[in-house]
Length: 115
Image (cartoon, rainbow, N blue to C red; front, side, top):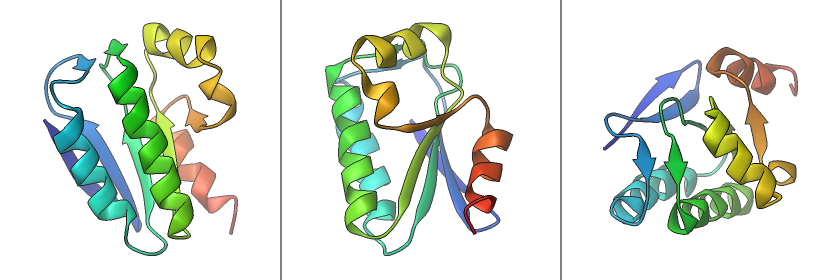
């Protein structure tokens, strides 16, 4: 479903198989992300590489993750949006709320520019 790795103190979560983030998997994904983001100062990237569809429950997980990160002095970023998912972010006007990077390297680098 989702795996979390760590690089230079930054957690990277990515989907292991499938190309849809929908109601069938949102609860376990949310639990995993929030378990990490509820720890103070966590920096987490959600790599959406290969995800071609996100439904409203998936966007709800993104919002919960961002809120949990903010409440715990952490940071939550998203990268590797497919054109289909990028369009959904724009239609919902969520591209203005989230820190979205084109690829994982840019996302990792964006943390270093703040320090």
